[in-house]
Length: 231
Image 1 (tube, rainbow, N blue to C red):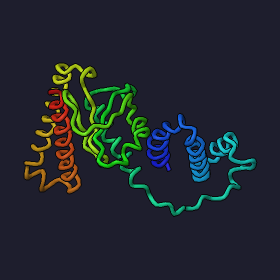
Image 2: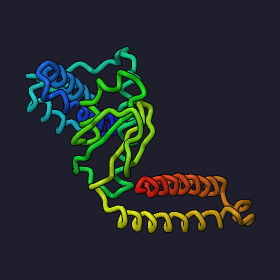
Image 3: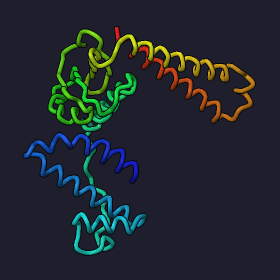
Image 4: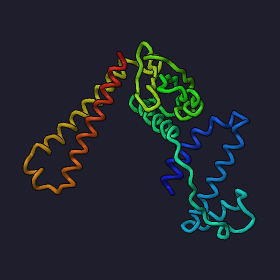
């Protein structure tokens, strides 16, 4: 329940649905969906947090009697929407560019996307909300200049960097980060190259070190790509 409420409902649906509040034709339906989900969540949480859920149930106007008399939610048969999953996963991947270039999440930036399919442009309002974009434009190819790129299921998402970061200072910062990552890779590879460690350490410990090596390599690749994007 925690994962659903925080990860799916709040971080994904509510963020994407913010675009609906300025559209009168979608606003009421979106609010009704939120009410529906919150009502179900409160019932599922009631056995674990009875006093809090009772207070919210009454305060939010879900019923005139106690929540303990509300019917228990039943599973529906609605099929998952693959396009929604693609939008959410692609936006999450693109947001990592902010962290890579040390850009605050509340800073509204200009984004661009080369859509993989025609339907993607219809989801631009949701993408703007998920990316906290000041502008989101469709392009056919990589824009010129310093641009960070993020390939996703819905197309390649671009983040123009000119006027957003200082190329020289950012390149120095990334070089420092890369040096730290290389040091970590060297450290873990030193462990893995020791036959004594590989043969005597528990299997899960050895696998943990191998996963660390893979994770650090992925991190190094991302940092090097970011540095290359600066030109």
